[in-house]
Image 1 (tube, rainbow, N blue to C red):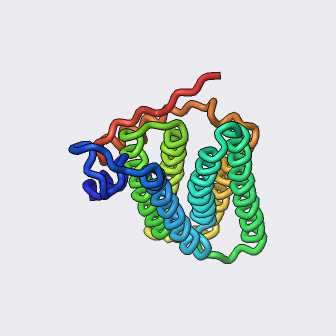
Image 2 (cartoon, rainbow, N blue to C red; image 1 turned 45 degrees about the vertical axis):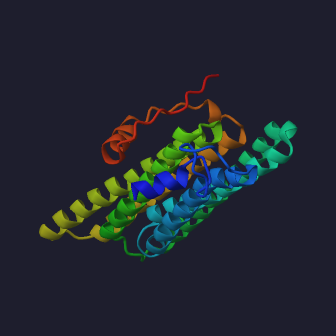
Length: 265
């Protein structure tokens, strides 16, 4: 798998024998090769969204919240490629195009957050849905694996040809990984509570799990709205995140030492 990722993220087209020999890539081939990792990571984010949506709709509002964020991430990667192509045709409008692209992504994220809040309100009033800690844990583990894969692909591409946009996408994927970790922690905690409650023959455990699930989904929605606001105002490039645990995890699992972009006011 690692060899496949290296081929996928190399700077030169598959038919080119560089750096062993002279580069024979055309500009179109090089651009296509540079875009390929973005399309793959976009596809992976959408897969994570589908997994979360299928499970979340039936068993967890928190997983559903995460899935909508994953969908917005996937489309954000696609939109980023579109913006880069437009900049290539009209470099003088780079700042304007990037600002418009960022605002489109912010709107998508805000709409997803509002949809989650609406669904959470409906479920709070209606009740009657079953929360499955086991499924929440499975979704968290699956999306964690997907997010780690996205980070690996983007990091390998960044090592070959660094650029600011890809650095931002790496940071975005790391924030997605943090959301997946939240689902893992939430699913594990709820699973333990469910086991203990069963052993103690406790009652009303289902309503308690629903309450926790709805609370986490609202927190994730507010988090999404906050990110959307920051992106709309154009302040996202000035945010700095340590992400120490995530960097440690990636170094241990993938063997990659990340250097996150540092932004200053």
